[in-house]
Image 1 (cartoon, helix red, strand yellow):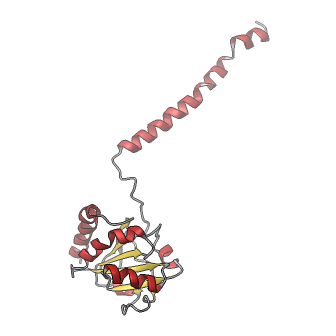
Image 2 (cartoon, rainbow, N blue to C red; image 1 turned 135 degrees about the vertical axis):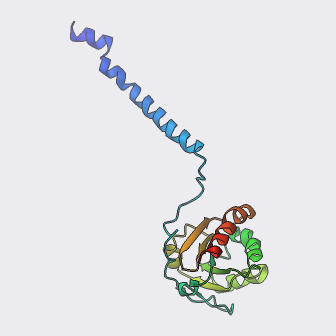
Image 3 (cartoon, helix red, strand yellow; image 1 turned 180 degrees about the vertical axis):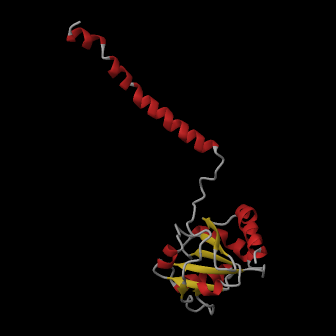
Length: 193
């Protein structure tokens, strides 16, 4: 058989090369299908802070509110919800009534980390919607939020009595996330020694 005849019939090895992209496609499709059917919540962003001490935080108070700033040494002995918020954040406005409801429970504290927000805007926001916070730190340059691993506002953390981060919620709190995630985490933290 001449080389011309072999080329005309096609090289059997080259015919198999045609199937490699198809095999890769099916393998990727299988991975994506398994991910979809796994039942995991893909909206949950894991936090390296869970189970770790809360980041060292020493933020000054928001001017004109008459509340203390946010200091991580104040977490000791308290179950503390740390809410990262800003007046310019529409989802923060959306979740704020839930924070006001939670503030009625004196078994835990709600503190705020005010992210890159002029003090007059923060005061106006809280004056309009109410203040659920027992302390608010002004994070003018956003460095503290970076230390907390914040992706964007709002985000909410739960810190146990020992200063350990127990829970993180990314995005605005909803009635469902409060009932199904945050409140059970708070209850567990309150039971812990």
